[in-house]
Amino acid sequence: MAERLGRHPGLTSSFRLIPGRTHMSVLPDALNEAVAFAFPLTPETCAAGAPK
Image (cartoon, rainbow, N blue to C red; front, side):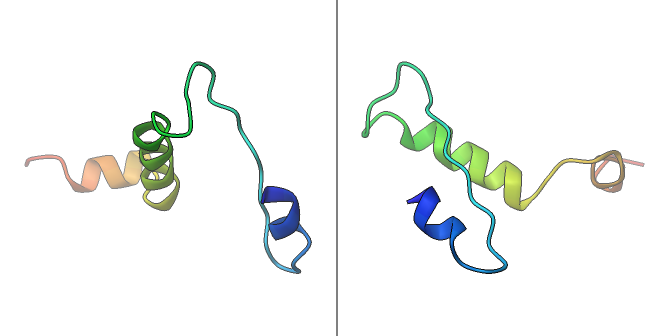
């Protein structure tokens, strides 16, 4: 799928095999990575949510 998506102009894709995981057990790891990609933690975003 990553190869097919990579053929589209403007899209970047990659494939990563998560060792020790199966098609069914990879979901929590994949979802965690997707959220981290969509909402990256940076010093600015961490400081914005810190209590004052």
